[in-house]
Structures are given as structure tokens and as C-alpha cells.
Length: 374
Image 1 (spheres, rainbow, N blue to C red):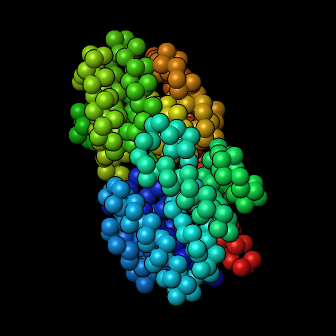
Image 2 (image 1 turned 45 degrees about the vertical axis):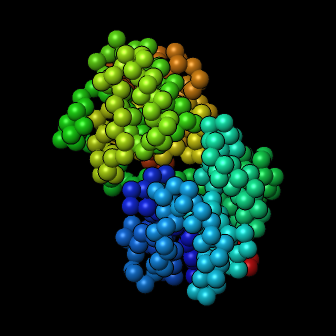
Image 3 (image 1 turned 120 degrees about the horizontal axis):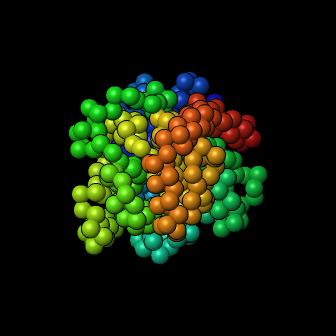
């Protein structure tokens, strides 16, 4: 069986789906000898060059709308023909952007459909058109669909009316060689001028609900010496609004926008934090809180969408719309060492349930099943 993997969404500074794609492909390569990867960034993968098929860098997500449109054109034109000529038994798309007319059986991974759930927070017409009109057609033409959480599966079934048996839930994992408790964090945290801090990690976008997190921090800022560190790629307009809010709340210098940081710095930032906080309105999976738990960092997270599936009883779950409840949870972790120790222990045990190897093995089972039924 030859597996073709469509991963044009990988870019030099990957987040979210890019991180998922890289780790999944590297683990699949250990389980399957006959594998081809279509990507614009071959250096991201630990693969023999003969297993890589180059895709134009124009398809990368860092190019915004141009990248999105380029991926759509490539998916509907070049990919089906190349997969057919390469004699692929099945094609796996590591993101939702699949093919409308696949020439070989197709499996598509859906990470979330948040633009449909919160359209007012995703005003870009291209996103809404894709999720409302193109994606449901792609999924209907797919032999199987992979959802990264039960929450995402429920959303897919509800909004796209797919049969439940077609959608397979396979959780994400984390890099165990990178994410574990680091004791020597100061060399990295000092680079960013950090000492005592609450850590948020993830793209700074409207549905991430960072504004409510900032308001919650404002309620306790006078009681703690901590900074609120916002680490992740920023949407420029939304970030500007947040900076204005920070100034109005008198939190300048206390709220720090780090932007994108190198992957090898992340475990030190997680480990050095007193608490990790994510209060998203919706998440397809929630990789940052998993990585934080793997570093033994106490987690405060939303009790909505997929986050309870990831965090379980290893963190404090809060209403993402209740700034006072979020503030109370953060303050409780900061002020009570025994609670921090208990949450840290639970976090490590919870994180151990997830791995990229498990993700790859379960994904391979789906691919093999589709290939057998072709």
C-alpha cells in the first residue's frame, strides 16, 4: 500500500495544523515504508528525499489569502493527477483542504469548523465560503474523515450531516523528546524578560478569547507580581485592539505580547510559568494545553468544546465568558502551592495518555481500511 500525504500547509514556522502534519508524517514514516509527501517545505520532515514531492511555496499559509487560493487550485488540479500517476493507494490530507474530484480514495482530517460556529469572529469571506460550501462537498467525496476530537466530530455531523461511522476520532499527540518538565528555564525566560508569569500559547485570534483573559488578569494584577504572557502569531487588527485594551486597563508592561517564538523555546516557557491559561470559545483539539501539561504546568482552560477532552480532571475548567471565574481560578493556582503541585502531578499523568505514535497508528488503521475497500 502506497500512502500519499497532502501537506502543502506546512511552513517554516509551523503552528497548529503544521505541527500536526510534521509529527504525524514523521511517525507514519516509521510504520509504513511506501509513503509519499506532497509539501512545499521538505526540510520540515525526517524523510528520505525520494519520498517527497515538491509543491510551490505559494501554497504556504504564511502567504494569507494568496496561499489559501493557491492551495485550493493545487488541490483541485495538480494533486489528483500526481497522486494517480504516483500510484497512491490512498491520499491523506492533513488539513481540511481536500480534493473535490479525487482520482484515488481520499481521507481528510478536520481540525475544527470554528469559522462556521463563530462567523462574526471570522469575517474573511474566503474562510466562510470554504467552510460553508467547499468543505462539505470535499467530505462527501472522501472515503473517510478524521476528526481530532469528539467535539469536532459532533460539529461535523451536526453541520454537514455526515454519517457518524464515516468520521473517526483520532486525538493529537505531543513531542515527548521536547515537552517535559525543564528545571533550567531561566536561560530562556530571561531572553524574554520574564520571571513570574501566566502563560497563554496559541494564535492570537478572536475566537481564542484573549480579551476576556486580559480582563481576568486585570482583576488580579494588583494582587500578584505576575505578568500575563501572550505567545503566538497575531492577527494584526485584533492584536491592535488588544493592545488598546491593555493600555485602557493600565496593564502596560504587565501584559506581554511575545509573538511567534522558536519551537525549542516553548518547553522552557511552559515549564517556567506558574500557570498556563487558555479560555478559547472553541478549540478543535487544544495542543498548547497538552504541551503545557507534559511540562508539568498547571492548566486553567475553558470547559467548552474539545478542551475538557484534553485536560480532563488534570486542570481547572472555567466558563470562558466569565472573567471573574477565570480570575479566581488563576489566583487560586498562584496563591496555593499545594494546589499547583497536585495539578502538576495530574497534568503529567494526563499528558502521558497522548502520543504522536498513537495518533499515527490509529491513522494508519483508517488508511489501510480505506485502501482495502477501494
